[in-house]
Structure formats: structure tokens, C-alpha cells
Image (cartoon, rainbow, N blue to C red; front, side, top):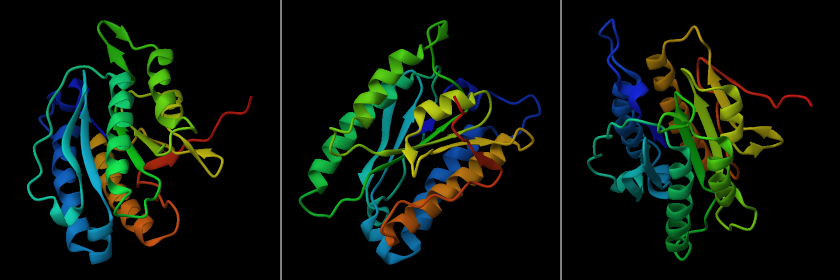
Length: 224
């Protein structure tokens, strides 16, 4: 789930590549590495690519890396509508898993949520209670295909938002934030590598595996 809002692709004063540029390159490379690596991973893993801004867009429908072919370019958008992210994910995950369940023994789906900013719609922040309702439908225990959600953030996104987006695994949120001293483009490269490693390791393992991306740290729940 790739954030392609304005802050991701706005030109940098120094003329350097933007996080969007790096993410666009990494998406294709991720699929390629999964395809040419372990044949078992390439044939068993199923990956979809979505982009979100004012709305959520399906860039690459769920497919095996070995069947992916050409990867469409990521779109560029304006704002950051989290509500549409979770509404779209619920619909797609339900349809995809129902379709695959007759052919495969399914594992828990995993969403890799990559963003550099909090939810913003119109002229103000999108209230958390708005998008959290949509997230709640996606993570409802009654939903047979409820996914793990890994939130990976940098830039202006707050730690609280990342923890609200992420689900918990082994009692801790799957939320990661970049060290402020690390350039955003380096963080995006590290995230893509971690996603690739996670997909490969999780397919080969009996459980979900997620390495901490280089230059990032795992967020811990705050004590009450």
C-alpha cells in the first residue's frame, strides 16, 4: 500500500530524487527479486500493489511474482485519504481470498502500509474516528480474512498514527518509524528490502516474519 500523495513526489529544492521516485523503482525490483529468487516463493506468494492519495487505486491485481509481467507505473496524487485505503482493502482482500481459497491453503494476508504523512482530506486532517471505523471493519475478528497490517512511516507521519494503523503481533504493534537522521529515499529502499525479505521468509515459514527495516525502529505501545 504505497502513499503517492503530494508530499511523496513534490520536487526537492536540491533536485534530488523524491521518495516517490525511489518507491516507483523499488516496486518493480521487489517483484523481480521475488520472481528470480526461490521458485517456491515465486509460485506460492501472491502480491498486489495499491497506491493511495485522494482515493485508493489498484495498480497491480493480486498475482504470483512469476506471473506479474510488466508493472504499471504508480500514479501521483494530492491528499492522503486513509478511509478509502481501508474500505478498498476490505473489499479486495475479501474477494481475492475467497477466489484463492479453493486452490490454496491460505495464510493470513499481510498489508504493508507505507506513508510519509497523516491522513489529510480537504483543508484539514481527516479525523481518526473516520478512518478508524473503516480500519475496524478490516480488522474485525469476525472477518475471516482479517490481515496483519504493518505500518512503516517517515517524514511527517506521527508515531501515534502508525500505531493506530498497525495491528498487533505477539502483543506489539507492527509499527515502524524512520530515524530522523536518515534520508527519506534511503528509508524507502530499506522498506522495500524488508517487504521482499518478509514475503520470502513468511512463505517458507509456518508464521509471519518481518525484519526491522534498516534505519527504522519498532514502536512500542505507550504505558497507560
